Length: 199
Image (tube, rainbow, N blue to C red; front, top):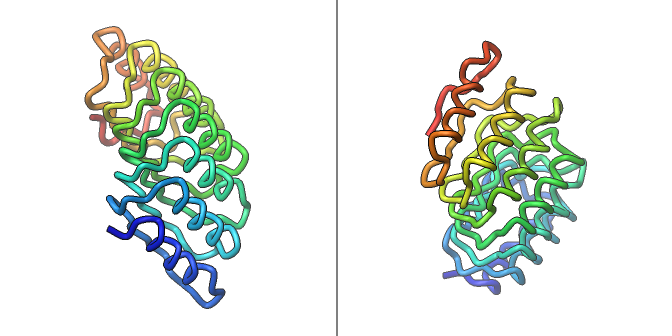
C-alpha cells in the first residue's frame, strides 16, 4: 500500500520535465484526497505526457475528484483514459468532473465510474456532456451507480441527440426497469448509433 506518502514520492517524479510516463496505475493504493492533491498538482505543472490514469478503489471522495477536475480543465492535459471506479464519488463530484470535461472535452475517450453513488442527478450531468458535439467519449462505464429509469431516460436522450462516438456503454447493476430498457432500445434503433458493446 503506497498511501498518500507514496503518491507524494511519485508526484515528485511527475514534476520532472524529462518524465515521459504515459500510463500510471494506482489502483487500491489507500490514496485519499491528500494524495490526490499531490498527484494532480504534479500533473498540473507537467501534464503533457500522461494519457492513462487509473485511480480505482481509493477513497478520493468528491474533494479528490475536484482536484482531478482542475487538471482536466487545462488545455495541456492529454488524458485519454480516466479510471475512478469505487472512489466514493457522489453527484457532487460527478458535477465537478463533467463541468471540467464540458470546458475541455477534446481528449478523454474512456471514463470509468463504476461503483460510485452518482444517482440519476449525476447521470444527468454526464448526459449534458454527451450532448456536446465536441465530446469524444467512446467508453462510458456506469455499473452500480444507483441509476434508475429516470437517469436512463436522460442518458438515452442525450445519446440519441449525439450518437456519433460512444461505442461501449456499461449500465450493469442499476435499477433501470423495463421502461429504462425501452429508452435504450429507442437509441439502438437510431441508424447513427455507434454502440458496439452494451452491458
